[in-house]
Image (cartoon, rainbow, N blue to C red; front, side, top):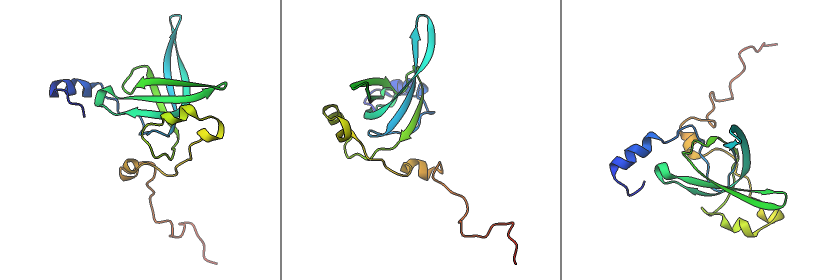
Length: 146
């Protein structure tokens, strides 16, 4: 939480988004951003590795880095920005640091991040994608005995 007054926190909470997935630094994410060009709006997809995540209530931000034609490109978005239409979690990454700025100095296979399997603990506890129903060792209902 921030060190601001409760009044400011109330205002920030009214703009807080709840439709975004949980993601962390090291995760590969796909950001659908709204771009305005020549009076027209369009959606541009930016897929890369999240190298920075600031969780500061309504003022949170994240940085995504990708390599485009051999050049590193980073974009920073506010979490609650109306320009961010949707965020998709493509792959979870296994990293040991919260800020992955060292990836700026690496290239090729050295900049790879290992994949992490499974869901986040908060998703598993809330019964999200990782929950299964049934024990799996029971017989199917339509079986015939021979």
